[in-house]
Image (tube, rainbow, N blue to C red):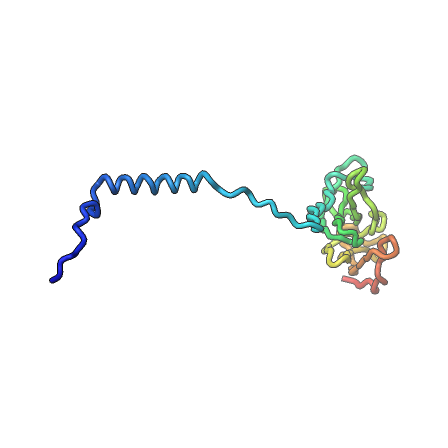
Length: 188
């Protein structure tokens, strides 16, 4: 075996003091890295507008409906919402009637819209209570309002028991709600 020409290096043997010094140096590096963080990112996109939060549909409780209930409260029986006129803001369609102890009270179908100055308001009456109709299903879909209407073939038919049914549809056209040609009413 050949002996080394270089003398033994005594300092190459690790002692506890060396380990402590290494650990302290590493702790200092980690702590320094934690304190010296890069600045927050400040990149922005130019020419991009933030999307506005969608407006909420008008609340029927905030509107006085044109019902004459002779001192009894009115009831909102059904509601549906959607953008009916294509302005990006939803409208609410409500079916309301006077609270009755028995029978089938006539309903009104009203369209509510939000006004920036005055809040929600009634903008259209699709079915007036004077027409003596009640409403089954109500829906708003792709700008169209559909309702299942029940009525009476004559004034002799009791108000508890409508004997005619028809499906009605309205769309916003030319600045107003236009009802599609009604099919023949059918008896029930």
